[in-house]
Amino acid sequence: MGVIAVLTIVASTLTLSTYPQIAYAQTQGMDRRGDRRDTRQVSRSTKHACNAAGGSSRSECRQTKRDVKQEGRRKR
Image 1 (cartoon, rainbow, N blue to C red):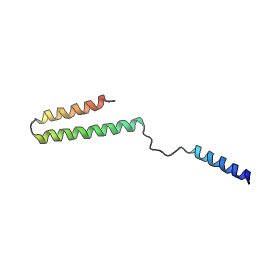
Image 2 (image 1 turned 60 degrees about the horizontal axis):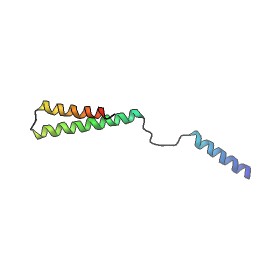
Image 3 (image 1 turned 180 degrees about the vertical axis):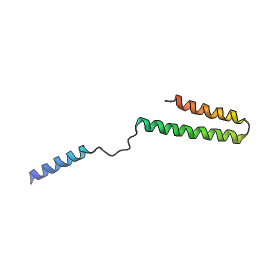
Image 4 (image 1 turned 90 degrees about the horizontal axis):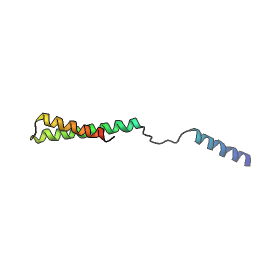
């Protein structure tokens, strides 16, 4: 009985170590893609808010959007 128990423990340990733990692993590329998406959304919101306010020209709003995106690139 003791031999069967030892073999079961060894087999289960081997099985668990063979398969990696299931986790939500992020690669650097996935992180960067997420950052770009977030930056894009923030810049769009900024541009839409600028256009809705009506105090600036469309070109000024576009420049504001570019500035937001450029800041997102510098954060890396």
